[in-house]
Amino acid sequence: MKLTLRVWRQKGPQDKGSMVEYPIDDISPDASFLEMLDVLNERLIAEGDEPVAFDHDCREGICGMCSLVINGTPHGPERNTTTCQLHMRKFKDGEVIDVEPWRAAAFPVVKDLVVDRGAFDRIITSGGYISAPTGTAPEAHSTPVPKPDADRAFEAAECIGCGACVAACPNGSAALFLGAKVTHLGLMPQGQPERWDRVVSMLDTHDAEGFGGCTNTGECTVACPKGISLDVIGRLNGDFIKASAGGKKK
Amino acid sequence: MRAVAIAKPAIYRSTVGKKAVMAVSGGVLVLFLIGHMVGNLKIFYGAEDFDHYAHWLRTMGEPAVPYRTLLTLLEVGLVVAVVAHMWSATSLALRARRARPVKYASRKKSHAQGYATHTMRYGGVIIALFIVWHLLDMTFLVVNPAGREATPYERVVQGFAPENWYVTLFYVVAVIMVGLHLAHGTWSAFNSLGLRTPRNNRTLRGVAFALAGVVTLGFLAVPFAVTFGLVS
Image (cartoon, rainbow over all chains, first blue to last red):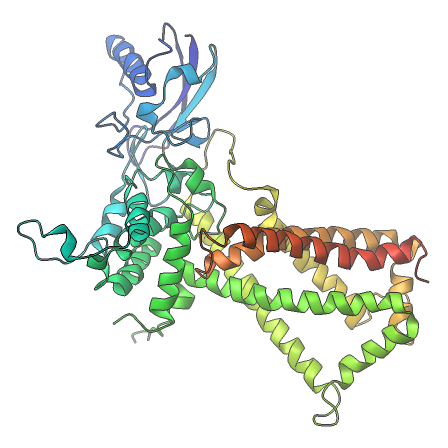
């Protein structure tokens, strides 16, 4: 396949950055998007240029490291798929492909396509945990969990924290990420002791990190490689209102 | 001297709280719209009924309370709701702008929901500008062609007369924007308050579209009836 890439190049956090065009040829339609970038980087290194920096780790669609906004869509054109699992056969021969980093004030660009997603870690630190005594695994039947709750908690727990929801949101909000964590932990009996404090402090951190507010546009759930449902945002809102207006927070 | 910070309750400060304010104030405005629409449709019963209704709005609650008491209270409530709605919208829009200082170079793509969602912000501005005009026209009677001496019925008929087509056009555009606003807003309000569940999602979508349709048609019926001579 013959393609023209327009890639965001930025030397460092202070650099202004710009889109740079790279013609590229002989790409296998069976290559993944990241393998295609590997081919480009090998060429750039051979030519003595700086390779394009991008985040990646497992390349199996489960770690949440890969990012990239491809032609204006986070993780590219295929639904429920991370960039690393996206293949070049989804593109047309001769296509011009724009590759950009996640765009959010809370996710500053480190270099080229790499952004600092530390804001998500700080949101988790502020409440995305349960306090449980550790040790040997407890007997599974000692804490009964209704099946629908277990299923919904599991669906929310599929969130890999990649940040595509923020990249897709016209408001730059991380409500889907936040909702996934609040739903995942708040539906389980083990998550009850911190349930009300969790939602308030995690939202406080979310807002303080400079993310935007959710306006229910629904772009996040479409961009989410794990297909996390908008329902988690409804639950986030409901829990927050109960916690703060209802005085449930300690 | 140290500035003393007055802590705003989290519900007003947070992004979720602002959406809750938007949802509740929007709900108040929807109730008003329904009442307003029902009142407007009285024009089809003739001048006497319509003018009698307009007069009743001012004498509501008499003789328990003086002339125009209940109406004034309702007006105050409406102003509070409009201000709260616009404040939360402006605050979230400004926040959204700060949250993405560098825009995407690629053409912005939308994959979700419909057209109505994308009209909320500019549509809201059009509606706000229309309200200013509409109050000058029908409440303060500054720009109404029939003016202060006329009856409410005459003001409506002369206001939407064919030669005043630009007034009617502005009215029609604003009402369509209100319809789009309700199509997304009604459903969105339930999600903002945490009242939307997978189970009631389809019902809420249906209610939102039905409400948007009824309100749009209800408000458009009057100007069209006047322009095309069904009411004169």
